[in-house]
View (cartoon, rainbow, N blue to C red):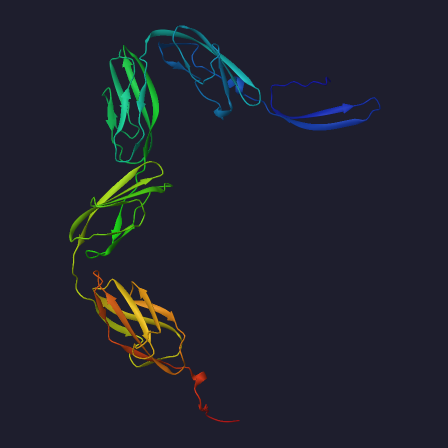
Length: 384
């Protein structure tokens, strides 16, 4: 009948209130019992460890990130490093304000090694170096590189076969005592450098195209080209003119946003002559009719790197239209006079810009709308 309700059993409860006038109010509520105080346990009441080792909870409750820790030396980590024998207490509090306390008596049997080391961050393909700065009093040690490989050298290096993050553990042993330290080794992904280049002759530009591939979310932040020591460039897709014939090593290096780089060298051969182009016109065929001014022109060719298509109304005394392309077809939307004959040809160029002009084809633009004197005849099987 008190206005304060206490219980240690969770469940649903009903409350009934009655005032002086005899009016009654009734309600139900749920009680949740936080079991945190029952879960805080440091293990056996007495334990023996080596000086320099740590103690912690035997088991952590759910959502350990929401817990705070307070040891009797006022430290607030989940682990406590023990140096001397004695009784140690921990108070663990959750975000609801519930707390649990436990204690343990620790007996020091010997001294564990002090473990410390440094590890560098590398790009894939490079060795990761581990520098041991642990105490020199030890019997043996063991490196665990986090990928199933191990070493027992004091300082060591290791080549990881995949980029990624690895949990590396160094364990030191001495007189039956041991201690360890875990750190993360990071191997950053390395980009893949590649490029293509156009064939060319001495005195004419070679076009270089970046084909490199960054890894993951990285982007390429720097390009560097070395044209056989003659010139350099930081453009992504530069061009360079070799003035002499011969074979020239071109070095291409890229660097990505994570600081990793890759390079590749290719040899560019420069000549002073090349086979002349051979060109055959295919469409529109010679002496044909076209009924639209949106015309697809095509041809076949060998030994060609560039083309110029020319359209003329008078066998090329004048050129009505000209356009340049690197492929063997082009669609042009032309302004043509109805029922007039037009001529077309291709100027083909090899890598030394030597020219070969194709034969000339002609076509007639036919548009019935502009033809005078046409009569439309209809043929039918019967007339109703």
